[in-house]
Image (cartoon, rainbow, N blue to C red):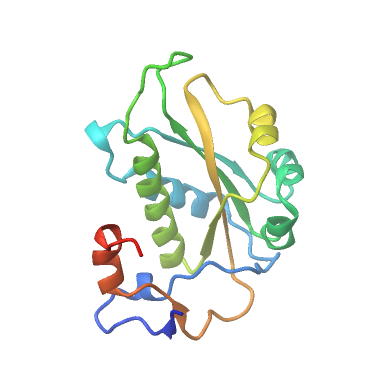
Amino acid sequence: MRQPQEPPAGLHPLLAGRFSPYRFDPSGMVDDHALGLLLEAARWAPSAGNSQPWGFFTARPGEPEHDRVLPHLAPSSARWATDAGLLVVTLTRRHVDDTHLLYSEFADYDLGQAIAHMTVQAQAMGLAAHQFRAFDLEGLTKELDPNPGWAIVSMVAVGKAAGEPPEGRDRRSIADLRGAPWAPVE
């Protein structure tokens, strides 16, 4: 069993302080300027061949887009994500239009890079981000009807965390990270 750990000295404070909250302060709105910076951070992420195969559907409380997304949240995520100041539906361009021709075999990886940049930017702005997949993918895809070749992958809740970050975080060891893919199966 892994034990909660404190981040090591020298780890950047934005990374050391990052956590995925399960409660958001409903008064912690994400204004247009903050939303623009979050999207800029994603825009500047690296991608294979500079393809930038990501897209985002943003939804804030009080906006019609929010009402389109909320019904598709699973009960487990609806308990906390509805109070976030921003919900971001993440999409990747996997195929060229409506063909089976891959747009980029790295599309999902590149989307992850963009979301990571967005997450660190949120932390730098005093916001927290929680990535999740607890939603009705088929229903949300039908609701948003992305262009051919595009696929919804995940969601990110962004806002002001309610409560304090956890004391220690349960993380795999460096040795486990380096050895896990090559460890013998027992």
